[in-house]
Image 1 (tube, one colour):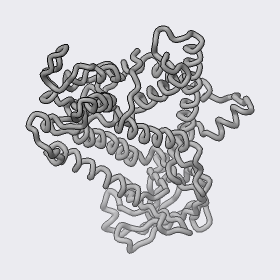
Image 2 (cartoon, rainbow, N blue to C red):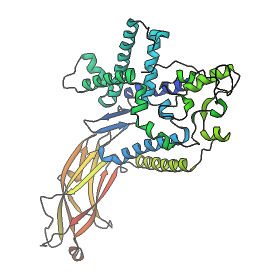
Image 3 (cartoon, helix red, strand yellow):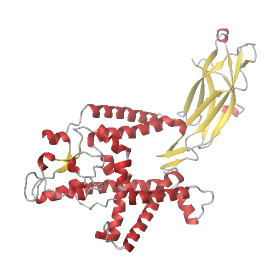
Image 4 (tube, rainbow, N blue to C red):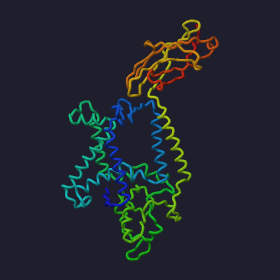
Length: 441
């Protein structure tokens, strides 16, 4: 376990601001309730609903979830090719919570934090604080699934009967304490999958924390001054993963910029610019001043990301909060009830995926829209009132007067319409076949 030396600087200050914003969003979001009384964000697994920004989504809308996950993946590819391992250094929960644990460790122990001669009582207090921080963070993580207000009410009333989340909360608390308290940087170096393929995504033009070896090497040897590097090793002392940035790109580098801040302080005493900063390898090797942002890999990643984001926005913009599933009733074969009227039974599943009650009217027409079918549902005017999140399964009868020519077909295509009577924009169409009986009456 590495406890790196703290360092201040421009990058550290910017990272503090970013991390404070991200932590604020993480802790506040599960408590936000929309003006309509709905959740801002919650993944309700038992009910199979994902509440987000005043709407909720169901597994049948998997294409939207797929596009969102694809957006996250392509964003990682695109921004890594542009600005290196920025996720790890600035937004990764592992990095942020290690900084949080170190903050409380130094708050309790001061300069003795991370030292072998630290007082045992102080070390015990640090670990106790770490457990409390883990519990607090885990509570909010579980709240995204179980509901923050419900959990808080249960905890204050000690009402845990038939509740499963206390076990999950305990598990995550222990896991976070062990991870941030003991595993720490080892996860970044040996377990993080992103560390393994980051070098494939980057090239010599990627803007990343880099050591200017042309100016720095060869390093100062005792009093013999050759390159600008004075061999103070401060970049190594402040590194949270214990690597030497001067040895080049490494899996353990999380691009946190602490080495850059440390080098800036040391080089300022020499009246020279820092040797470690955000550079591209090409800038150092070729001496170029400008970054080549537009290149084949950034164009490819950027184009794919734009396509996926546009598709996701289109799907969200055209989303209809109603799910309609239809299937022919296998228990009763289609038949002619007279010489020309074809009858077939269908099973229809209607799922109201909005927060308001929907009054849904079922109708059916031929594909060309010229003939309306008779729809028998057992409800007055074929209208169903469905509450928010309610699912109903209904058996409906469809009847159509077919022509002699259509009798020779295997089926007659029709369109089933489901429309919200008070809001016609909520309208779903399903193209289904009316099967012609093999033995016609």
